[in-house]
Length: 253
Image 1 (cartoon, rainbow, N blue to C red):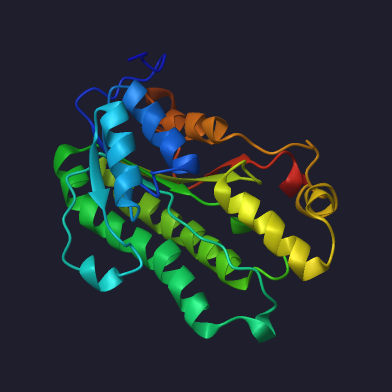
Image 2: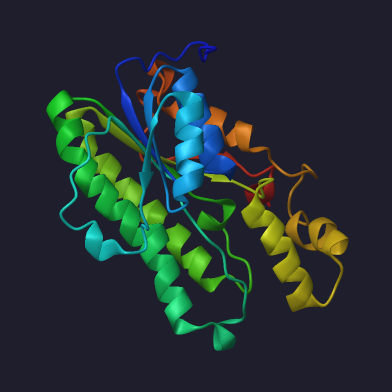
């Protein structure tokens, strides 16, 4: 396997959620290339198993929205990447309350519980890296995405608290904030936005999704993965409680 230049995670155990596809899969591959033993966590058992076999890791099939199953969890993880997420597009007055609650469980409560489960091991070893795949929507809002924006803003606050508590123990906590990434989730958003706005999918991409981006293209999952692995590198040891923003200039406006 080709090693990730400049980052040596040999002997480290990494857990990546939502890792069977998209950003999570790219992160899992990049961490494995850096030498980490990667736990591929996803509710898609077959997808997790296939990627784990590819990178020499191990699968963990779990539905993270079932947060009651995570309350007593303990994780032997040196690196935790909270990436799992979903989207639902609807105006607030039409947003199903059960869907709102589901998204917050999956994208905010589960990251809290996983960090809680991993911290004792990290504290014991005196080293740990918590990386949360947030979003430009962790810094900005968009109409029709109340649950997603709320969850990502909450994740930002959680990361900052973890950075303050973890610092004396050699544990850092940071968010990576991508704009729109070329993933199945974004492809579904294009379709949803076209329906909500009554325009074509091509128009959604050019006039809605990338309207505020100075760089007019989708971000690639591998670019996000490179940012995640950088935050696990020795060069990033003093970076904690902050954001690595990959939004093409969106938040510069």
